[in-house]
Image 1 (cartoon, rainbow, N blue to C red):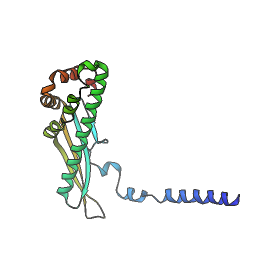
Image 2: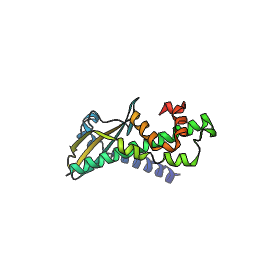
Image 3: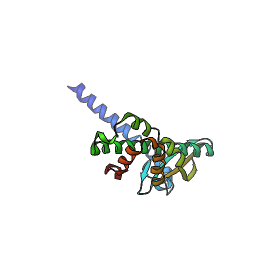
Image 4: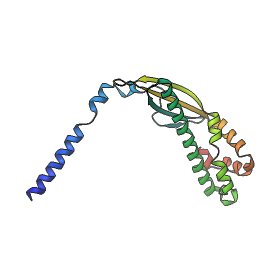
Length: 180
């Protein structure tokens, strides 16, 4: 019985010790949360408004230009992935809404929709970048904001899906598409 109690006390003592040995001092030295990030930097990796979708990312590198390039590439990747996910969700919801006769469940349409990344890559633009030195290290931390216009994106996707015009129009006209 004493061994069990001793073991439990030892485990709790270790847990308290580990939890108290975190990086609180490191965070305090770095300043407040607002000083770590530029004022324009989003709190989520992708933020959607009525007319624009923004992507945000950060990267670290020994070279400031390379750090910016990495952050921009990561933000573009986050944006593209988010748009693909959103379109697939809208397609699934519209398929339920409109039924199988809409063509939204056809494999050829699904494969064509998965290639719309090209439309995203062509339209995305970098709106903000920033670089900060990482104190105590010989490296740079960069921040990037990229954006894409929803209206231009929808037009470009329509062009990409020209062979599936009827199905695309059904998708765009669905109630589900209003959530995109």
